[in-house]
Length: 369
Ligand SMILES: Nc1ncnc2c1ncn2[C@@H]1O[C@H](COP(=O)(O)OP(=O)(O)O)[C@@H](O)[C@H]1O
Ligand SMILES: [Mg+2]
Image (cartoon, rainbow, N blue to C red; front, side, top):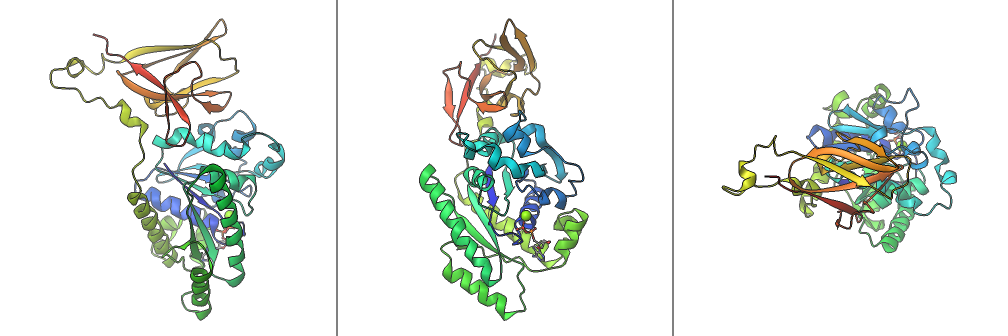
């Protein structure tokens, strides 16, 4: 999964518009996209017609027992699932003050979704506090919308400073690309500002410019992305080009390891596995966890598409947890969710690093003759 943070601490520069329309455009092209609204004002949710109710979102995940799948709204537009935001998110800084690891809460929640989504797009709030830091920590790239006006440039230096700090501290490579927005092709002023952006900023500038059009406000008002509301307007075409740019950049980086690859067993000619009827080959698995003292234990892995406890029966016997499910022979990666926190299985020494720097546990299901 490629995680893109849409960040700039300045309000009104086009972050939410970019998050919605980039996500919708990637979704339209058959990519599986998770759009995460990280702004307590919930504008990304509103812009997709969701938000007349106070929906649970990241606040409930970070501060209560909820886990990410509990708060994902499926298919809000084609190909796009949404994590909505509510105003409680504004209190997160105070609620999590002093908690160790609080800047990597989002990363930990996203870790297991490597196989379920192609892209996560995060709409950041207009500040560089804990929420934006969580987004940057989880991201592989940052798109920073900048309104093509002179004083819009200041913020980028600050954003770049924070990104540099994070990169040093966690040894990350987090490229920032500036995206000029609300661009008026017909004024010389806009072109002057664009030249200044290119000359003065120490960051890459997208080849795409999002043009100014009244259609954007109209689309937000009725709660639809541009590709549904006005697919032929200038900015809709600009967001198509931005999606092209993102997809091209993704194609140039090495493909990440997909944990699902491990479940694919290619039977050899005449091998036992080749002759086994695939239905009969499903094994019943009973995993017993002795020393895990918790209120809620969930299991997610390759075998259930990383959806916690999907197709799994949970038993609790004399204080021992048991998870019962079926799977075909093969090697599977999995993680436990212990009271809402994703982690590897502490009772299983067989483990493997995952693509996001964490650890997955391994389960081998043998062939029964
Ligand atoms: N290209 C554009 N043309 C015209 N209006 C735009 C454009 N991009 C954003 N807007 C409008 O500008 C305002 C701020 O945009 P928004 O995406 O909410 O910014 P942010 O999330 O950075 O605060 C919104 O009313 C939005 O409809
Ligand atoms: Mg916004």
